[in-house]
Image (cartoon, rainbow, N blue to C red; front, side, top):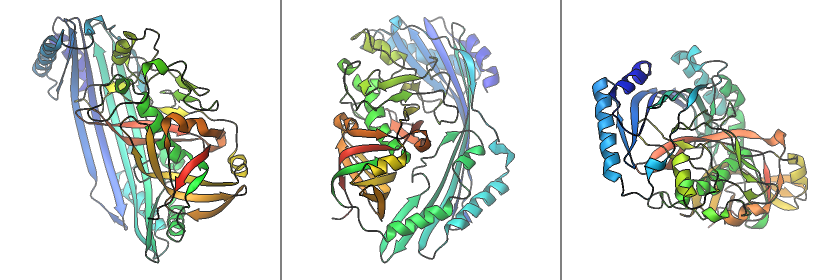
Amino acid sequence: MLDHLEAAARRAAPAVQHWAVRGVVETSEQLTVRHGVAHSPSRCRDAGVMVTVVDRGGMGYAATSDTSDTGLAAAFAQARDLAHAVAGRTVFDYGTLAATAPAGRYESRVERPVSTLDLKHKLELLSAASAATKLDDRIVDWSTSLWTLDTEQLFVTGDGGRAEQRFSHVIPNVQATATVDGVTQTRSAHGQYNGFCQQGGLEVLERAQFTTDGPRVAREALALAAAPQCPSGEMDVILMPDQMMLQIHESIGHPLELDRILGDERNFAGTSFVTLDMFGSYRYGSELLNVSYDPTRAEQLASFAFDDDGSPAERQLVIEHGILKRPLGGHVSLARARAMRADIDGVATARASSWNRAPIDRMSNLNVEAGSSTLAEMIASIELGVLMRTNCSWSIDDSRNKFQFGCEYGQMIRNGRLAEVVRNPNYRGISATFWRSLAMVGDTSTFEVMGTPFCGKGEPSQVIRVGHAAPACKFSGVAVFGGET
């Protein structure tokens, strides 16, 4: 489809102020082995085009899976009609928007393509990992899964812009549920919602320790089922990278999305406690907090060269030494924000979940930068606290401020030493103050690249892939509670 798209788009395009076409072809495969039995493979191919037209001060979109000249001409006509219909009725004159004209190419770095394994050998790989997880009769549920996606995307504009991008994503997981004396607990390798997600090929499975991690997961599930409830009270907390991922996502990523700050998302996904006047001066966290938007990290899930509006992407700090610097917003939202505050800076992060969705402001790769503390130093600094791993539940208010999060695995810290395992560790806080309690930031030895394929937002709904990387971090004086009623 993409081979002929550019020429067809230029033939079909009407005479308008600006137009763009984004073609997407995505193939995916999902494999699961549960209780040693392979589920039916799920394979999907999805392809189509989104047309954008700016004319007479309005902007319109139209999507089509018909990429013939006739199909594209109909989509262009629909987008143009919508642009004319909204002209003069929007909060922003899109005719003043500077057009993007991208030029370049991006491709995921793949060392060993997943395609080098046929279906038989993939299922054998999952079956072996699954069998290794069933190491005790008290393991009552166990499974392994592998989700792979390959995406080709072509973006062209009426003024000669052209960007071609190809992505390869690999999402493995191992999970076990144990029952001990009537107590049931689930442990996963990287989160029950696929927290280890990276770009690449079969080498991602090696980085995830996919073929060898089953016994650890099972042993920790058994330990949790036999463990006491996490105690409640104010104490220090160490969050490991697979929980930091959720903490970053909910209490930094979503609040900094510029369309939320402008009020666009309030009906569905909520607003933000952040306001435009905070950028450049607001203390979001302690001096130790440095957060980057980084689309350049090769293995991370949401790395790219251009966002879905064609803007070139580059690494930027959104929080520096605790001070809020810039929002997460594409060039459309940024132009609107600059009409109210001219010095607002932004990043290229307008993204769409598919060819039939228009780009909106999204997180991409949002990372906490590594610090200088070892994990041993963080543990030694705590008299009473708990180390928490792997998110399993979350709740946060509409302004992305008050939250409470739960983890799969907890381990008490007493007098500077790791102590007993505890189950159902939870904590709560307020985004606007929680990050100011950041007391120590782990060094590169504690740093891990994680992600999620399931970030939801938008009307109509869009579920998108997001990367998060972080070291282990210590927070002081956190409200912790267990699962007892």
